[in-house]
Image 1 (tube, one colour):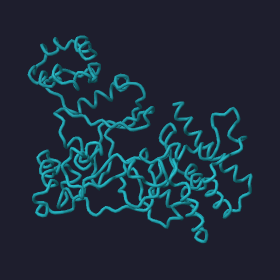
Image 2 (image 1 turned 180 degrees about the vertical axis):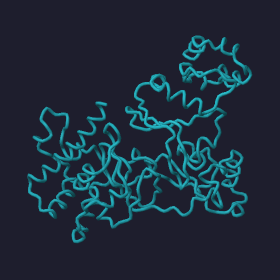
Image 3 (image 1 turned 60 degrees about the vertical axis):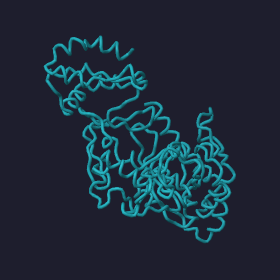
Length: 384
């Protein structure tokens, strides 16, 4: 109904009658509305307010310029929570530069929204190569590919509930086949590859320069993973079997070092030096920041640290406030509260505190300081 009302109010019938290219205009209209259930529930954006001068045809640049010139109205059409960030944003993927037409940040969903303007029809290539390589595990039964070519992959910190990767929590698999097509004769994998080539996935810029477009090379699993961003849950995850996607940094280290990275002393350093997104909220952790962390040399305590880490790596990890026993919404200010960290968490932190020779009061101040820093950025994000 919204679409019908908007078409009437925007004088669609009259506009088609006045158009210099009526056939093209009708061709560009949504088709099959009465036949497709998906089309019936769509809420398309109608941009008649852009006031573009009448032409027989329009380019993507015409549309982009008109949107920028009418940005306030465009944001209202998108809906609540959108913030304009950039136009023609350059991004680098596998050493290939791309331009994103319009970049927005959604302050409610805490994510970026990228808009690539298309005048023509949408193709598989526009969706990107991920559509070919990634599979939701819920549709695996419908994918006719041998299991040896499907590997579990961790794509998001939201799939992490513990300090160690649990494959049962993962939502995706990735297609990895480093064999030549001649070696795949009479396999389901070859049929899938041929189908992908029919859809021209092999011509997508990020893969077409490869000698064999579908080969991802040898991908191994590191023994620890850092998340690129964190909000109110912080963890460095133990991992030995699972491939990690681009939202994680791989870290290869002794187990006790990875365990220490989960101590509050490490989080304190990150909160002080790492960059947050505009308006607070998530913290963006960079590789060089991880490299610059001051990690105590506790090799002589590694057995004790490993034993301590093993005690709580299989329990669910709560928010920073739950882990450290401070209630930021209490009437008592964070600075006046007596921290009550979970026992296993406190045991790990105390090993580091002992090495730094901190007093009991200094240890409490570390907990209070971290919780205050975290609460300040989260509160800032809520108030934007």
